[in-house]
Length: 412
Image (cartoon, rainbow, N blue to C red; front, side, top):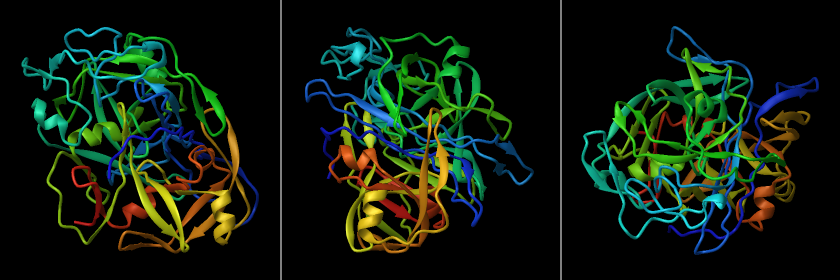
């Protein structure tokens, strides 16, 4: 069941293996998580958090990439993203009004503003954040190639090319990010206009200040996307490349939700947006939660017999579980703790084994997870205990997020 959430989800998710003691090989670097906050029902604010890993990603002859380039960013009070359009403080054509641009709370203007929906020159009402809303403003389903990073150090990640103001950028496909995020260097190089003042955010216990910027010319797969205001956050992506394309940020759940479906084929290297949902081998329910322009992709799981809220996160190159939950469930540790870091700081994580995870009627394969004290769990009073990362999802070859029916379909 979809519902707005009115609690802060201050993410603290791992990123890069910075250093480790001798012993077993360290767990792969972790990627994105979620950070969201709601100030009041009348003025919701949302946030995004991701995680990153070091080491450049370069293309190979097989079409895959080595290394990794996953961002880490958390924004609290991000402005309207793709989910609701452009925040300007006033309701004008092609914008979404907000009563408080400085705090980046999003509200759709009741005057039904319009914008060019697909580059055809026709205008359509700004879509409200409902699953599949893009279809109602003329955006068609699109399938694009993705470059899959799959290494011991980097874990599993998928990157799709996004064109912004005529320049190509590789974006991490990240359902764990509640909104789409730009690297601050990309925003600067493109001369994107700032909107309002920087907002407050958190990554792995560190403070950040993402700057909302206006993106009015961007596309994926040749299809132009509606003008939006997105958070721009300093990341470690400046020198990273995937398949020869510089990394520019991450595609968040807000974009996928508006298309209605996301189908990610790790084996074939393809991503479909708004495409039909396959029958699959199995499926499990989601509890997708929407607040303003941000979308939290959550599943209610049972981990070692205990209930656990897990963010289903294609941007996480390793699953995550809070240290408190791991201790209570008696999860088996693997090797010594490893030092992992985001763009701003680092934290020690203890690799643990998740070998009894069930969502709905699906028993998921065993995997490693990183465990550390979780601000997500603290902020939600134990409602969210961790992330279900890409390595688990990739074992099914294809994973499809069906936001219309609020479920994940595994396999094809």
